[in-house]
Length: 395
Image (tube, rainbow, N blue to C red):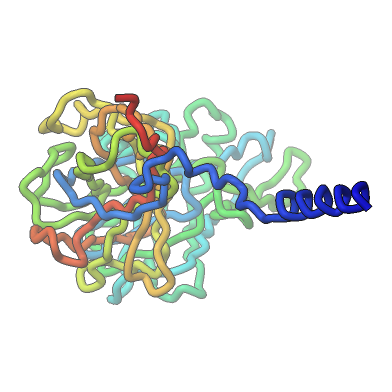
């Protein structure tokens, strides 16, 4: 019996000590219960803001602007490579077709005249100031009346003598300037960058053998030449401003800096967005979904200079802004940048620029409140966590 009793005792011991559940370690036993690395979300206010304006090239978008609307006036430069399509021929007639997609404003048709450009230009860099004195102002080579009917393309008969000269002397073919004196609205035309093509030149010519033929030549280069009437000087940084704005035609840009002094050092940034509520009353055509890009201000000074030419910006786009579904707000994801700020990189702010200068006349005004408690003030919202800290500090 004794061995049997001993066996029962052993089995009882095993049952009591080996089948009792014990909780597994959670990983927090040695951590401060007040900081387990939980995610927090906070809003950080503006500490500085400003605007400035700059005229940029407008030859790389899918549209061309021709006419006048509110404070914006725009001419158009176009160029054709005729000599590569026609050789040893006499041009009998030539007609330029300008396909339209939209118009801004209303009014009577206005006269557009074509002039021969006399200097070289590049659609990616050309401004109106480059060609203002670079065309033959004494000789109109064609004209037409611009109408506001979007479904009717504008057509312009061009002097055959000019096209013949382009063929014989291709090195002096710098294209045409389309210009007006007075306009009551602005047309948005399709440019050569448009997927299905933009303007074209139809040329009827006689070959050396006496045969008649017609060829259509697509635009090789084109650009909008924009002027914007503003009381804000070119490149002047306006620091005492009551408006924030970004404009495709006006060339306005917005500078923003946020006070993140209360962000814990070495915080792990999960999400960081700039939010700007749109002033729909003053904004122009926000439904055209004007896009804007955010760039890092790389200047090492604590205050912004007085001229935008003295501001250093990192060329890489930090974030592209997106409008919400009802055009009420704009937001920019700058999570990567805020993480760098949290790790010690100097916070010089960001600049918001139009992404497609000259594509349309879209102008976004953002609501600005000097009262930090206002819900519509631009703000930076950051979701972050800090690394869990030990329960004991070693003392």
